[in-house]
Length: 351
Image 1 (tube, rainbow, N blue to C red):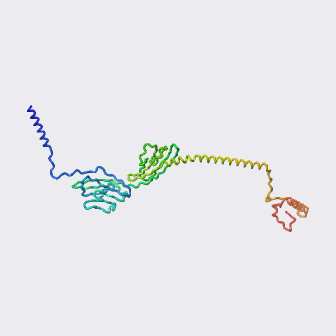
Image 2 (cartoon, one colour):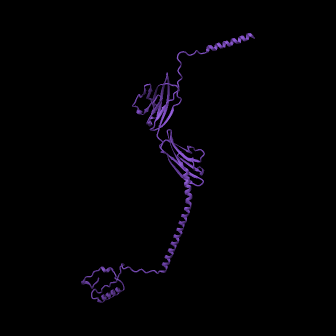
Image 3 (spheres, rainbow, N blue to C red):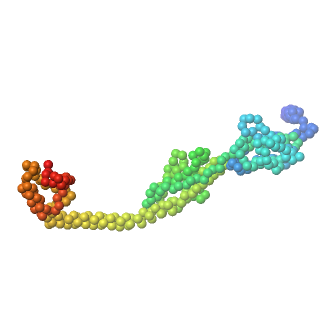
């Protein structure tokens, strides 16, 4: 028993010595530098055209900055150094670059860009040198967008009754504007979920069928891009209630107007019938008056030709007597022969 126990202790001691021999030696000389900190993802920054953008790096606690270098790349092309900040302050390698006087570097961890332009969109990188010999890189993706135009809101009332109000809400923006249109209800607006609605294909028109209990709700359309947003609200209560009142109040007016027009039509028909009847009776009693010949109509008289041409005085006297008697019975007769002028030499001869 004692021999087995002694062999066990010897094996345990041998195993312990082997483990001690494998243990690494303690480090000597200067302390090792801390591990390098790396940025996992680039930060996205969205701004509106003409505004300002600030790019700031987040350093670990207790970090001491020796210098910071800012660079810009508009695309796959090579980056250009736009600013350096060190113990001597701000330095601009090329003051005549595209940024000129629009850059601000208040300290070693921030870069400001004023009066943003569309071409300012791109990748901005900050290389920060820390004590004693650590370098950290930070990337920013800046995107500059046009301001969002104000939406043109319009409410189209399709019909309103005491039970329902059917409306279509329009939220229009310029077609060339790359914007998103969203709808919400309440204050602040929340997405549409349980409200019965129908959205157009482009998302800019919303059709609703609402009971009176939902007329007090506020509906809002928002037009936005990644950097800007504008909204417009609709007051459905005033629209639906006004239409309902107008419809209710207009019904008695329509009835009265219809009765008045009907009475006027009947009265006019009776008057026309009586007038035509009276005119027909007068035409039956009054005998027709024969038309008198107009004095302007030409009258013709028979003129006897002298036979023989000379010495027929009786025929002339007969003609004169006939003309005298006819002049007593009727007015002056105009004949086509009145235009024949007789000379004193041939006054007794007519050919």
